[in-house]
Image (cartoon, rainbow, N blue to C red; front, side, top):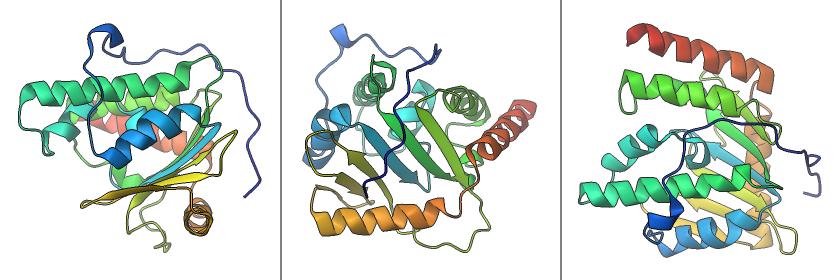
Length: 220
């Protein structure tokens, strides 16, 4: 658990503009998630995540995030917009002066699932293809026909911190957990390695993302 990718300088980037932080409400959500997004994630040197169902929050467009939240437990449009704003602010860590390295593993079906409809999916995959070219972001897809079952239970993330033990975030439909317990972090890291062993290389993954993007464009 001591390996770390070499830190790299960020390249020039374009992405969906976040809502102005000056007029945004304070972040809301479950206590475990706020601890992760406000305390752990911004301090991370390296982030690793596995997402079997959705594009990771750090890589979502506004419209994709809006569709995700609209299908959740939000009770009003204002609550949805507040959640979208918070998600866009959260993404700023990838564009700061010394950003963390992000290794994102996604199931291939994430590219096919019509979250928000065809136009939203085209926009999302176009954004994902662009951000996958950043020096500090690596996106790898796990093919749908893999025999690996290590990641089918839930999504998770690992954060390597400069001054604290590796911390994990595990999310399920009913609850979530953030923990720096060594045994749990080692267990999740092992799962991550098993899943990544089945993933395509970043270059192959990027080609698959572009293919799926173009297919969504043809349908719009």
